[in-house]
Image 1 (cartoon, helix red, strand yellow):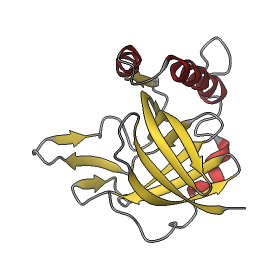
Image 2: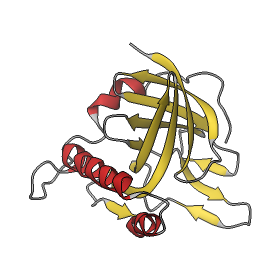
Image 3: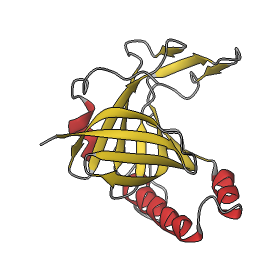
Length: 190
């Protein structure tokens, strides 16, 4: 069963939020979506409608970005072709719930997870360390965040100590029912 929700998203420590964005909740997963502006070129066969999934129990969000290239406002080109259309981005997040509205804030640490057999790529640990060092992320928040991140890695990327040839549960099976739902309403362009 799906329940309609709204999501506001932003960076940790930044009061500026994007949204509300339309979404649905099913158990411990929230899925929400938004439409990227025309400066984003979608992968062939895809649109600029980006769907993101939030695992509420672990405090991570994940998305398989719909776009291959973006021409930024200053004319800089971001090209994701080498990453591949089946590479997922997973973000460590904090989550606040206000009845049917979720506030999701990025907590710096990310991992890129390709599904073609390449290794994952952990990113932005230095940003997380800087945020802790400068008091943007409190020590108790940091400890909780790192414990949740390790649980995500153990449950979804590598359950055993030794590396194996496949992910444990990635993309997480729990998001499967939400992946192919029709759009959640009129797209919100961000």
